[in-house]
Image (cartoon, rainbow, N blue to C red; front, side, top):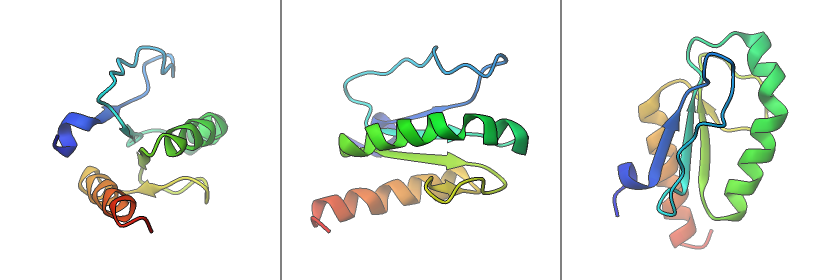
Length: 99
């Protein structure tokens, strides 16, 4: 299975809702594309993302946020989608090596 088949990229809806995510059993990596989101909005949803990231981590998955600015030290935040994919690949290699 390749990385694109196991990764879901999502953006916030107009009402800042994540409930429309279509998650399948094959999906284990998640990328939140927050490019264009205001710092205030990012700060408001930060706690939900931390909870989500912890639950994904327990299932040996990855949760990466793509954003132009950093708004939390606990979350993995990168500036581009390519860096998000690179991070997931490194995460997978570490799991395979049991680091």
